[in-house]
Amino acid sequence: MRLRTALATGLFLAAAVQAVHPLLPAWAGYALSDLIIAAASGYAGWHYLRRARRAMESRPVRVGYGFGAAACLTWSLSNLVLLLSATALPVLQGPGSLLSMIAAALVPIAVVLAGPRLHGIAAVRRILDVAAVSGAVFALAWEYVLSEVVAALGGVPQGFAITIVAVLVLGSSVALVTLAESVPKDGVTAQQVLAWAALLQAGTVMLSLRNGVVGDAWYAFGAGGGYVLGAWATAISSRLRISEPGDEAVERLVFGPWALLPYVPVVLAVGVTGMREARVGDLGPVLVWLLLASFSLVLLRQFLTLITVGRMAVVLEQQKRALAHQAHHDGLTGLPNRVAFHQRAAEILAEEHTDVCAMMLDLDGFKPVNDTLGHAAGDEVLVMVAQRLSAELRGADVLSRFGGDEFAILVTDTGGAAEAMAKRLLCRLAEPMLVHGVEVVIGGSIGIAALRNGERISLSLLLRRADTAMYAAKASGKGTVRGYQTDTWPASA
Image 1 (tube, helix red, strand yellow):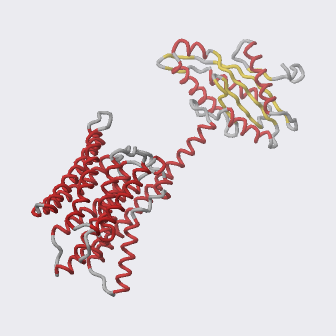
Image 2 (tube, rainbow, N blue to C red; image 1 turned 180 degrees about the vertical axis):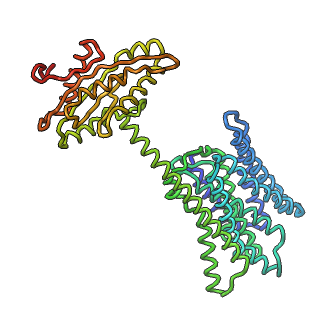
Image 3 (cartoon, rainbow, N blue to C red; image 1 turned 90 degrees about the vertical axis):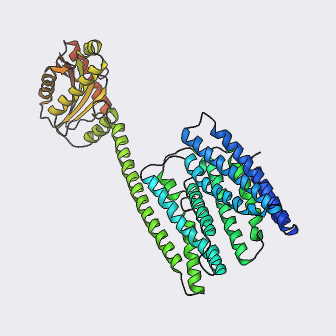
């Protein structure tokens, strides 16, 4: 059955049960609801139990399924006991209610265990959310349920009423926080539907307690249909997949559609308190302390969220800088890559300089190092070559690894000493290197193409001239410097 069809069927069944209740004797109405709830929760418990035995699931998830199965089966058993109490054995009313409370206590445990694991600030934030929501929901429960019980009994409410409300408050708070942490793009999950079922169940139980205190029929104001719909939603949840762990993106943390859901009961509690103050002019100490505690927890939670968002922003900026560096630098030597070299060279060519010289350097004797010592040794040689060249060049000069063992250099304002600079670079390269415990000697050949003041040619042509001169240097015996001669070498050379 599709999810929408199943939900529509549940709504129709709940509405039908709610409509039938006034036409039935009290015991028959209880029996009808108990039978439907026992069947739906038993169905959910059976499916959760089957999923708990699947070996493909992780152990924490299977434990969560186990608690879900225990909660549903206990709820089914409690309604069967309550059915007997309504029809034949009134003495079973107490045990049936106790079993219902145990089932309600197991639901938030199942929701937490079956969900993604949180660590660090995220885990603390979840605890603060649950605590803040619990305080606000308890304030609402006090205003609309427990205060009525106090008035009816003329004193402190019975222990069972406080206990069942406390359990329901905790369960509904965990449910709200679970929904706030959900990711709608992943589709509806078991935790989300189970959370909605827990919220519906909590509201229905509190409504029933209130009806019992003020003398209304137990099913009044939708309480009868609420029990049935909550059980039906629980059955649906047992057939859905669980949510998977995901990244805590800033957009979901701050702007997600469910991000503000935990604050709804806080806002409602403030609104209720304001109406009470306007109507009665007196706020009880319970409401005041509950609201103060909730607001303090909300402020602390927002402070932690600010820390999390700030830390994410710092990490994002660091990643942005790292990506920008990777896009413009060689991953091995850290030198500017071909793209960065062209960008910087274009800027230099657009400026006024007495002279601009492009050099192309190709290493001599590099291949034997790779062949005999391995590529790791070759990489270490390239790193050392880059360091030696950088140390000999000036800050305004541009050095780039064009690929393999070929390097490009752009120097300006040399005063005609470009050839001497190139020879100094070769002398520095010729110094022995210690690579993997072996002494290695590397040489190089350099081709130079000079651009005199006022001359205008493209960067690609300048580099092509330097490359031509470099091949001439290698052909003349390597380890030498050759300059491009415009009058003797055609541009097509």
